[in-house]
Length: 399
Image 1 (cartoon, helix red, strand yellow):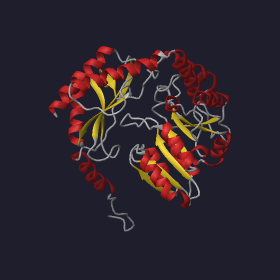
Image 2 (image 1 turned 90 degrees about the horizontal axis):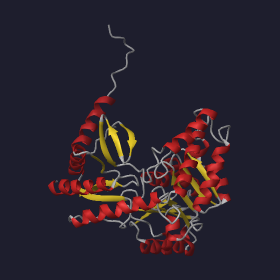
Image 3 (image 1 turned 90 degrees about the vertical axis):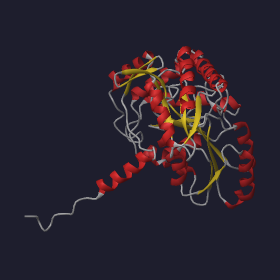
């Protein structure tokens, strides 16, 4: 007999199943895949070794044995985790050593570690801009920057991608209405591979008494004469108010940081919720990152190699008739397809041919701009780059 107190069955699964079918029909359903045993620009996908042009391992450090040994030494000495938020009892001396090292690299006074780049942006932006303030955000900013802006409760104004003249006009017309103004951009835009012209941005910001916030996740380690990133590339090191970077891309470890003045870092320690209310990063990962930074410094061939491979791929694709946006040596190469379904068909065909390439579709990019996102690494063999170019040309022509 049914209990009179029994609850009706949940309708959630049926509703979600209907939504999943709609996502699948639109080419927008996502699924995890097992990727392991990273080696020389290749990975095991299941039991098959394929060429990996989908990761952000730009310097080839994610599987570097020296980095792993540095992590292992501290792992054995200190254990697996920080065990607490850094403001409680999770602040290890090696965290601060890494922060000082990153500050020297980025040309700022101080940096502050976070567990991820997403956590930096959803913590720092709301701490810096509130009601009565305005945020100017590039139209192609990463999702974490967009979410940080939404959480800020400030007025958010979106300016056309990399259109600094439009930004200047908006600031001229509106700046006086607000207490603070924060300009939020990426150094290297993660889906297009193009750069924000920071040498033009900084003077505009100064003229309008606006703060600059640059997420340099994809520039750190690759750009600039010493690998310090997009700020060094444009000659504005020390002139950007807030600089953000991640450790899980070119440096091959995990975590992120925000850098700037002493006052900025002290303020964020007390106000950035995603720093205050989370466990500190494992000390072993800080040790791994310090070793990765050392290797990147003493082995500049890695920066040269990834840019060389980017130039080679772009030239071969252009010679085959594809229009590829971005600087010639940008390590992120977008191949525009248009709609999501044919993009994923092309991705699967390249996968069948032994090439793992990112298929990027909404909401990661705007509708109608789905693309193959190809990322280069210093450890990709030249012949693998050439083979990829030939296969991409064949697949795109057939799509």
